[in-house]
Image (cartoon, rainbow, N blue to C red; front, side, top):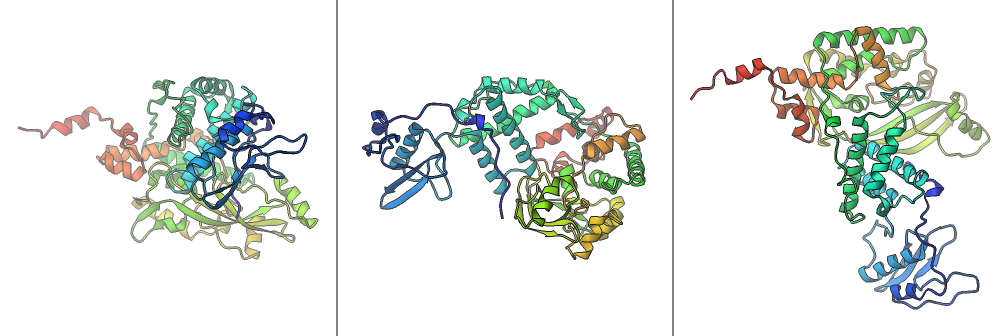
Length: 498
């Protein structure tokens, strides 16, 4: 089982901090406190305890410490930094088991630490995706625009300000639209980028890799973070669901069967107040119709997908398999970062690739399991979704029929893609089509979640209960629903006596 590749850094980001010290460097030997051995002509003089290994760009530490031989990478190709790492091990001893010495912490090391935090269950998957994107963008900016290595010691408040200014000049695609329809990022997007970097650098300071947060001196745009609660009325929700049914029927008539369950998906999001990712990863095991609860909790999903070799992305893999080669498996049909391959098998007769992989997912906010009561109008729909097979969503689909012939296990997801894995469609764009038919301006799929919480608050439900139902980690997040009308204020003080 292999994990996804780490953060890619271009070759231009290799450290340019200092040239290696040459043979007459007495200072290097003095730092290490050990004599320098003799080497052959034309070779760089290395102090005792540092060696080179074939195929590795880094210098390696090879010493005996308290009777135990220690052989590990110094993490750098620079001789002066490798000597410092060697001296640190000689004085403090080797790091704990499983840890590697970090001579010069980089953005790559920080991302690895954040990924470890996610695997430990203390960081949501959605947060990991955002932090990874920001660190990748910052690394590319430092290498391409500033011409410096992505080392944490080089990240200052000036670098962060220049990065935010560079992001403001770079058009992006909004709300899942196609890449051709680009717009400049909004002030809220830029402020969110700054918050993501602040969360990452806070972890770097805790690890001792940075002396202070470079974002601490950058003021947060308070106007950009004003709450955006766009709740709909019940009539608008009903009109949106009717528009979703019309859009799904129209796409079906045009041969587009990529999202047949649009209306049920939106109804489940509204009826349970779910986030989009929580709805995409909802399984039949999360639904307890007998007790009337839906459980949202961290989960490990074992999925079996069937990828078509007729697709252009998988054509080269199919050709290599027919030639008897064993190439790397194609990219998994998921955007969840912790997805690990178990095995893959090519079916020549079906022109399809069978891939087994496991997803490890944590909900955003409070990662603890939470139980959401099922509303009465939603119970018949959930009962039907639990029993509905994949062939009922995608009838006469080639991959679905091949899946039946190969006797593959059914997907556990309530809303699976046609390959049997996660739904990969951008929901905001198609929800926009349904909203235009319903006459609702500026639609977002997250507005259904806001509508759920707003109606609960208007029914008199306490904020602490709403916080638990929505899975907010901090009550301050739930306070955006705490607006009272004059009528509510009047009822509150009506019976006040003394």
